[in-house]
Image 1 (tube, helix red, strand yellow):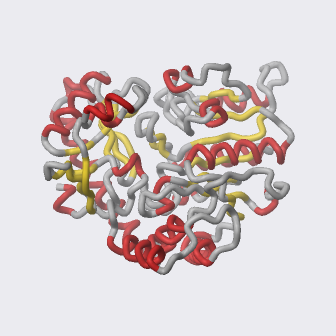
Image 2: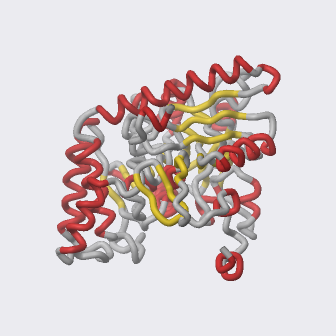
Length: 401
């Protein structure tokens, strides 16, 4: 491993918790170069919902490469992009009666967020954005401005402005009515709150500590935005593509956000890809006003299309994800009740699950012990106090056990 320590920046992080050299991966398992198998309950931070080297997606990808399909195309028309758009409309948008135009903003989640913030400001002519406590939206400057983590914000090196944080669901443990503070500020001309262009929110906060917003809270936020003429941006980068059960984390709340950010597992295979979905009336871009060199990575379109065809032509994956999530919830509930002195808190929805410990040190020790036993997990939360499970949605019942 000396070459990594010699040449790679100190900014590397995951490799510090898992100090082995990985060589192969299949399904829910990663294999180190000496052949040891690790059960992967990290799944590329949610970028591998369908597992490593999924055979359905691998075949489609290999076939496309072997026939010399276009790899890089900027935003030109290609067969691969057409197949993706047609399949996305047929399998995802139409069945859910969602009417969105698709922006290809660049290949990462932060790209999708930057496009959303930029468009919201262009449409409304306003600068301010409302974000939430413990939010995480990416590492570029615009995305960092609406992120809560002080360590990540501090690395920006400049003031992060034009964003105001509000309390996320249950931030005050139910001691305050939902949105009382937010609405008071909006309605009070003396509050000093700049009139916001948009609100950006995660249905479940992953990096923030597996904080799952109640469906009624999300519905209430949607109503507040409508009453005050504020655009609602739903960041589904980590929690979309079935992570909570439905394809979108907001579906069960019965809302239709103005803008939706997708990345990570939208590419299906772990290939970089991102989408910013926008309601048609918001599509006021000038040609080329938001672009990027890697908007058209055709191999990602190919694997994304195949993932939609294989896993979203019926509701089997959604039902399986919910059932497996409930198994984890039940096990975590037993742990909480068995060890009351530990003050554990079970958190999450679907196959985004967390167990909160009294300290980040303890949660980190648990993840270290898990690694030594062949299980990959990470921590999340403001102090790393939550042990986080993000396994592939395709894991077997045996692997879950």
